[in-house]
Amino acid sequence: MSANESLLVPSHSRGWSMGLSNMLGKELSAWYRTRRWWVQSLVALLLMNVTLALNLKDGQRVDLAGMNFLVMAALCVPFAAISLAQHSILGERHSGTAAWVLSKPLRRPAFILAKLIAHGLGLLLAWVVLPGVVAYFQLAAASKGQLSLSAIGWTAAMGLYYLNLLFYLTLALMLATFFNGRGPVLGISLVVAWSGPMQFIAEPIQKYAPWLDQILPWRLLMDVGREGPLAGYLALGQSLPTVVPIIATVLWCVLFVGVAIWRFRREEF
Picture (tube, one colour):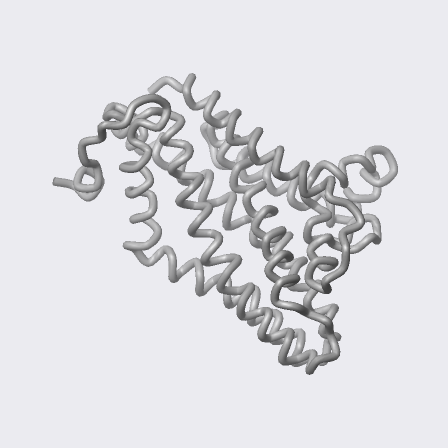
């Protein structure tokens, strides 16, 4: 009996959630019964916290070092979410695993939701909680009480960090249901991720479509339009100047998941 078969047990659920628990168990096992979780965690700590430590060692101001941590989260971390999302759909489609699994008592919405939940939890632990906790103590130790950095405010800021990550996870999941190749999924997702911070793209956006800053997640972690990232306000215990990008990002995530389920239900295997 193969590993995948051993994870599939009889299911008595009905409706759209049929097979969700079995599929979710399989996806979680791929995270926590393999080396994926600690490899992802190690990469996150090396990328995020070692970079932060080097910035602080070079004498960079603590507030600027904290902002650079958020910039890294905005520019680099989405790549992890995009890569995992596209592989989880395209990898199984190309290998034939998706067709085999869907021949069992498993609804297609449950297939998508299981991958979303498993990858969402895995990314939360590896890329948000672990580096976020370490970064808090790094910044608190370096500030020596000079920076008003509360645990509650930093936790709220990490919440926006995770929301930004979910945006790109759900976006890539949706795109992977439309395209058969990895190039379009990766390319479109990265263009969206980098359009806000890249100056040569941001300037035309600011001139002709400044409203995009309000409906896309760029302002969550980046200084777009010289107003400062929303996560920075939360980290310092300050009131937010706007909540529109937060609400818009949540709505985008819901829309992407809905479209992914709609499109995948029409996929022929």
